[in-house]
Image (cartoon, rainbow, N blue to C red; front, side, top):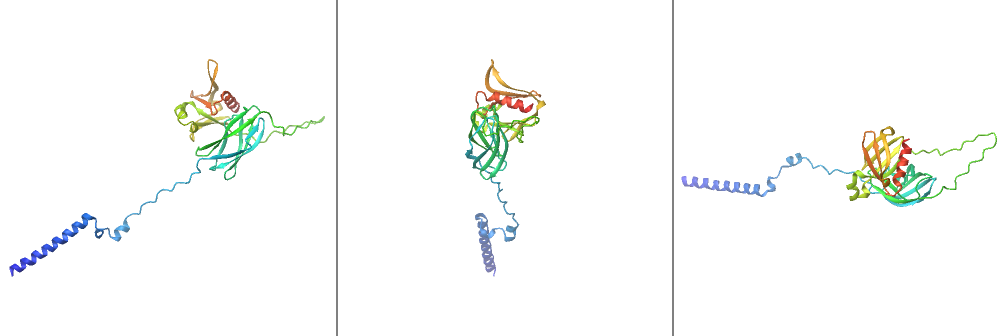
Amino acid sequence: MAKRREGNFLGRARRLACVVAVLLASVLAGSPSLAASPTQAAAAPAPLPPPVEPPSAGTPEVSKVNPAQGAQGSEITVKVKGKNFAPGAKVSFANPGIVVLSTEAAKPGELRVSIQVAPDAPAGSTSLFVVNPDDSEAEAMFEVTPGSPTDKPTPATPSAGTTTTTPTSGKTAEEQRFKVYNLGEAVSILQNPADSKGTLIVGGRKLRYEYAGQVVFSASAKEVREVDVNTIYGLSTRTFHIILSSGKRYNFAGASLKQDESQTLVNAIRAALE
């Protein structure tokens, strides 16, 4: 009897050892039999979906400018066609004698720009820029031709005893925008000239400078102490400076780097601040 009990005990011990071995092997091998129960799996939080970024308009491209020229002393409407023009896109010119009066998005891929070309605007080729709100920009060519247009009506000669007033255009330029290089960003200019241009904006007797979408400085006419060209021994360096009443000095160069551009920019800024 004792031997039979001992045999039964040993048999149970062996079977228990086999069960323990199988369970241990399942744990080490990651057996699905020990996976989380459906209740536990349901309790686990679902992974968050990746953030959806708003689509970008992309870098603007200009395919056509019509007309691609304007005469000194004229006021014309220019159609700029292309793609990736974002809502709020602006148009500006490197020539300081061209003032943008208004910009209208006529339809997708087309901007209608009303401009005024000053009688003393420098003649020749200049750059037209389409700038999206994210500061991506496209450049195209525009030309200022000499002379005033001949299609303006001649004022009537007043008769005796009457007084006439010659009407002027009802449009006024709220802001003038000038593309410039800030010479304080010399390293950036050498590495990537196209992305190193800032914008001097003058209007309403106020002057501000924007670079990479940020306002670097903003000053009223009273806060601007001096605007003048930089010279060495009386010779122009093709650069100019703006000194604020705080003593802060900024040195700039016109985007086209032409010989007479700095003086033209200085004259335009001074006139706008007066």
